[in-house]
Length: 358
Image (tube, rainbow, N blue to C red):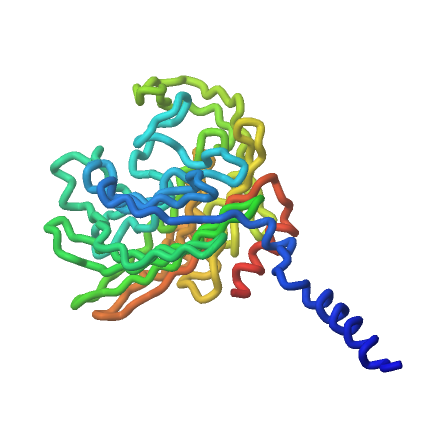
């Protein structure tokens, strides 16, 4: 008997099964991913980010809305389908605060750049103060890539003086990732000075910021002005905290409003919206100026990382006054994760380590 003829088919079958067959098997990791797509809407001056055809967020750069003084990501929707960002002033929802009209979605700017305030600018600024304000305008969509559960959007923007001249050039790469249980935004922003020194004087108002939905605020009994569904403002002497469930936790174990003004590698905000638990984490990356960043995180829904306002947060013990010399550049890397559920500190640290190991 020819033994080789008997063994060979068995050997082939064995090798075939080890290789997974002629068709690629879907791994557990791949099966947990959702397809993500960028859609360029030039007439609407925005780029929509869709996951399985549903909106995750939009890069808005329209100059048709006077209230929009910088490009933003708005709205932002979690994997379990809840909107984590405040609607006011673009799309007011009942019961929302109507303070700080410059707090829209997710943005990056600063409160004192060569004496100009980019942070507080909105259409609420009176005419006589507009020369104190800076504006950031989208210059060009440089590139869009769709690749399975990831997409990459690269944009160029200009930080403008009140007379319209360019103070800073910005290049930002957004990388969007979709998982079954999470939505992830990586923002890599490079700022370049032109022919003059640009000073970022230590200031409380900065730098990577988000304005959160009412449900993700921390409960409060202070008087406030709220909005109805038409944007009409109403003064309220005492807050109704029904459904207000937010709480902060940072990488050092600090919780609640005490995270404000503290340094931490990451900070998380958890709460419940429409009976669905959600956690938003902002992560600071080693190599960023001011790492680990201070947190300008307030109970009323402002959630921001500010690496440059060191004098304010340290009560004068530290001072940075970061500056770019002519033609110098600086790059800031941050990750924003929107997770289903309320993971604990250990799991959040694992998510952070995945970010910094890239």
